[in-house]
Image (cartoon, rainbow, N blue to C red):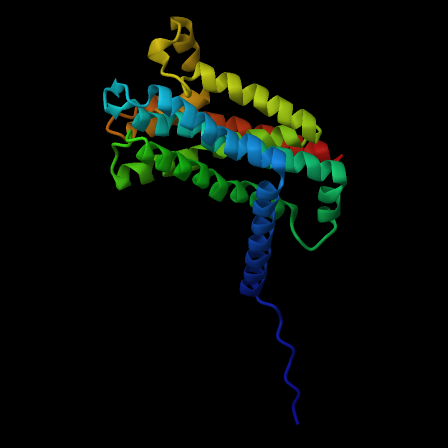
Amino acid sequence: MTVPEERRPSRGDGWIRHARVFGVEVADEVRGIVREPTALFFSILMPVGFFVLFVAVWGDLPSGNGPTGTRMLATFGTFGVLAVTLLNPGIGVAEDRERGWLRAKRVSAVPVPLTLTAKVAAAVPCAFGVFAAMVVTAGLTGTLDASPAELLRIGAVLLLGSLPFALLGMAVGFRARGNTTAAILNAVLLPSAVLSGLWMPLEILPDFMADIAVFLPTYHLARLALAQLGGVATATHLVALFGTTAVAAVLAAVSYRRART
């Protein structure tokens, strides 16, 4: 009687196992964001609360492509999405470093890059939730004048365009402690939001802010989102974001290597 040979694991089995582990990691990270009071407030509740306030003040004002409240879905929506994707992966990495969790991951069967990718992926549903809450708010206040296709395009642009900011957050998280990382990233996000016209239109702000805005990636992401409402997206905005992605990726890689030593 012949004994069947033991089946060797195929490459497909490895991918399936990694996919399952990735799903578990993402779910765990999402729960961590929702359950952590600080992360829940600063990255989710605060942006939505600010949008409610600002759309109540500025939302009914006319603009070139409909009510200002609709345009704010692109501009303030940029701030809301970045509040999630910039802060949470970076702070999560910093806290894992402090607890020694990343060091433990390096000797486990789970690849560290998979864990880091899960941190970024977990921010996506939370960021989409923030944007969806803003859409609902605009609808309830009567300032929503956009088709479902336009809203989907805005959401897609914001989520894809948030990648370089997630990489930047992780670059800081690889080098700083959790509280320090949160302070640094907020010190980047909040002034950028003001100077890029994410909270209030640049037209009503001092002229020097518009001169500074063109050098900020947050401005270019907001302009690409605004283009989904009927504007014209220029190549300049895409080039600026691609350049930001390249720089952020290099910074994240260098910070990760140095964090390992």
